[in-house]
Amino acid sequence: MWKTDAAMKMKSWVLWLLVVAFLASEVFLFSANRQKDEALTSLNAAKQQAEQLQTQLDQLKASSADLQNAEVSRLRAENQDLPRLRNQVTQLQAANDQLSQQLKNTITAAQQQQEQLQQVQTENQQARAAAQADADAQVIAERNHCINNLRQIDAAKNQWALENNKAAGAVPAAEDLLPYLQNGVFPVCPSGGTYTIGAIGVPPTCSVPSHVLPQ
Image (cartoon, rainbow, N blue to C red; front, side, top):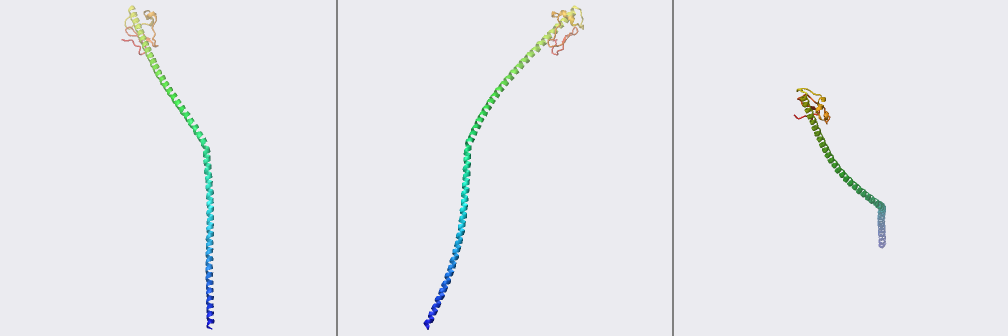
């Protein structure tokens, strides 16, 4: 009887242990499944993030390739334009050299023209000085000639008065003096002046101011 009760108790404990073990295994299995689900969720999230990163990386690679292609195209275009630009620079340098030479030639021609102008001005000044000297000489010569004419008129007046017993104040006419003048011709002022015979005792005069008979 005692053995039967002990066996029943043993079976009851074993049953309880089995129930506890089953419950523990269920709890462990539930926890493991939950951890598995969380791990799968994390793995899926990481996978999505990796896919996004891969997509971004691919986009960056494509963008980098586009940039590289654009830079290569630009450099090729610049290299293609380089000979043309060099040719233009060479042409500009040649044109600049030509303009510089033309400028030098123009400056040289201008200097020569300036020298010629100065020479012409000097010659003109000399010519004007010579012409003025000739004019002055002519004026002096005409004045001297006129004064000599006045002397002849005055001498003819005095001789007319002496031969015709004319007193001071008598005024002879030009015809009265012709017999006493050279070649019987009344003198003429070379400068176009007009003579005034005047009275006896008064010197004859000329209308030209500088033609004055010295006293």
